[in-house]
Image (cartoon, rainbow over all chains, first blue to last red; front, side, top):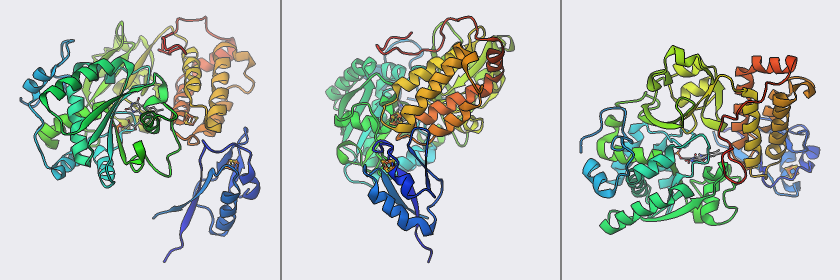
Length: 71
Length: 420
Ligand SMILES: Cc1cc2nc3c(=O)[nH]c(=O)nc-3n(C[C@H](O)[C@H](O)[C@H](O)COP(=O)(O)O)c2cc1C
Ligand code: SF4
Ligand code: SF4
């Protein structure tokens, strides 16, 4: 049985670019020149999934989503 | 009521400029046969029909996913926000009953009772008249409503269509990546948004079957396409060609005539530029265009004449596209403005462009895939391809300064909706 895989998705309409997520999860999220998050492509590394969940609940705009990837 | 055998299918009965009224439509094509739902879904699957609104997604696959939901709604999308396209308006004017037949077939196939005809102001009278004719004859089992699309580039984007019909955020896309429109759209119901040309094709597939449909076109892109051609004649014209034909053959362009064409824009303002010889000899299909970094979009070919500064044209379109953005996603709002500003410098004040062309690929990369809709992706494709094709011209600007001002060529609507 394989472990679930996850991906982070930003809702660009809701996101205000204050960058809380990039501070909490710099391994996966960087900021563009205007302060909006750039999510590294691919799945979130298994060891970072818990931190990714924290970033999701800390986003003041509820703009960050952790999505399970179906095989 | 024989099946058309030539390349003219949708425009078969409208060689002349007249409108095909319901009587003439039924005399030419007959009524739509009353096929069971399963046969309709199979026929559309087997036909290989792909959507003509710009994304070329397989129609049968979308129908099956919408049909799996409860009480879906069908939208016939004739918004045609792209300024260089005129084929949807032509089709709705000349052969509205093919579109409405196709919408009725789609509704039956996916189990919808409500069809929304979403069209620009230009097409409202055409559709209303045709619907009244059908109502009098009692042609349809489904109900039709007409909704006017705002006159903006984005208004035909799928989630923007849903918002317009729902009456909130009219003409503006939403973030639907996690819950697609085909699962939750108008009134929260599964929604099938289909381009009007795709639906007209459906009307003929329902009558003549998938084998007939596949008798022209390519294996992966069967059937015909309506193409809006600008720059070959005095004004734009719409032609119907089998998919996979080269523009050279479809338009009868001689080598001498080709020499007067500076470059070709395929797919409109969200498409991309190609060198003339490449564009004219390319089999006209989405997959062939994609392989070269462009798209055929909704079937648009603009032949840029010699003697026009391409960089001025590219900057005009980029600024127009920036202004047409919905202003709600950070990377799109910021990135398109910087892109347009840099292109304006390249066109008019190239000496002030520190760093030359090096900033453009980075800027394109910063907007690609980062909006709620694909608008910024289209702009990035347009700009990347322009710098590829007009790289020599850009080098001349950087070394010797801008061209003398030329007459604007590409149609760019102003804020008031008038072409300038
Ligand atoms: C910026 C943008 C503008 C669009 N405008 C139109 C349009 O005017 N008409 C249209 O049919 N599709 C348009 N589309 C595509 C629609 O989102 C959708 O894919 C299409 O209507 C589905 O129909 P089809 O599968 O028959 O092509 C647009 C897409 C984008 C990203
Ligand atoms: S925390 Fe949320 S709102 Fe802030 S930048 Fe990240 S995704 Fe955007
Ligand atoms: S990507 Fe741009 S055009 Fe699309 S919804 Fe976001 S702001 Fe609007």
